[in-house]
Length: 539
Image (cartoon, rainbow, N blue to C red):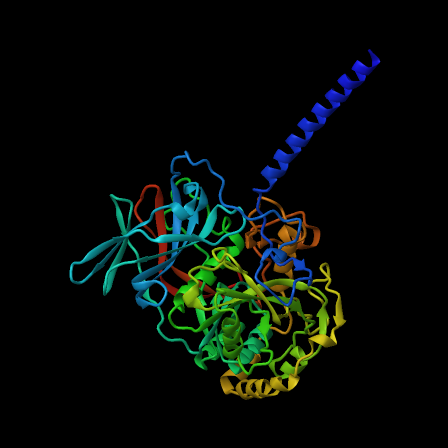
């Protein structure tokens, strides 16, 4: 009898444990579908010298990226989409003849898998020839924002003069540009959008480093402090950089249930800018580097970027993209342009002894879409250990004030990171030559000597998602429109960045348009981009 009771009790315990484990496994499986942006979390350096895996880039606590989870039987949702840019390629090595490339911001909840959504394009020419094209859609997003970056590629008609988008009943004409056929340099650096930007020192250094090693900077601008913008325009005239518009999007005639695009897109749709730059230079550049302004690459063992990247592709011809990890370097912002010394800034070895999530270099003929740090449509992301990106992430101001005291970086001397600093001497000479130009000297007198917006925005980004990344979130800078009180106490919030009368900005602007109501997607776009000088600096 006692034996029977014992086995009966044991059987009950076994059943309870089995049920508990089954329930727990279901919880884990459901959590696997939660998504979080990896941002720039540090990673270890245990990977072999070169690797074709991208998994080490993510901290072990992150859940894997997956697609939108909506039941397949769900009907279309009535949504809005924004057409960022459209390019026409009479001949393309990778896309074929009469190709079309589009960058869009689309609502992920239109249907279950947005890559299977069928956009109908109608391409026409002056000979009354028309072709209906259903382009291929690629998604480049990571987090759970409502709006996702999409790239559409297809083929139209020869000598295309008109492009329309249709839902089968209603059409809307789409403005388009002929894609670039030539670039100022064989290597183009696609620079992520700048907003409320004031660190002109980083721009100056990067411009001269890039020029010396054979690259041209393509810089997207949402807003720059006015004197910084004037300086950048002079560098554009000299051929160091191309300035491009990156807009805060507006729906001219928003539908009743439209979701606000800036608030609900991932990291200000930075991936859209990277994809746009890729499509612009797809047939013009030999290689593209997708960098931030504070990311600087010094070639190792080669005289220029082109030779270093070419060597990577010769050794690994089947690889689509190469990624260099970042190493943060201690740096100081100099108060005046005369004080800048590039050898002093980049030639020392005070680094943080850890790696940050890297950036991508690619042959544009092999790539059709791009996210921020990599392309999610490339199966194997190759991490090169033959070089690294110098990351000037948190410059100390000229008054010795650390603008990011709450997120301290522990620097140490790492002599193994030393390179031949003599290669920086001609870069310094070129900088001194340009800084003595009359127009540059006049503008330089107005440049800010210390940062103001940088620490405010960085603090907000840190508190919103760097400090405690949230699963199932939409990381975005819109919440950085905060008051000074919220920066100090993190309690009260207002609608915009605290302004200063001596820090006004130049903003990108345009004439915003909305197409006719269409099902299931109504499309919006813009024309006539231009710069506007405004009081204050808005993100």
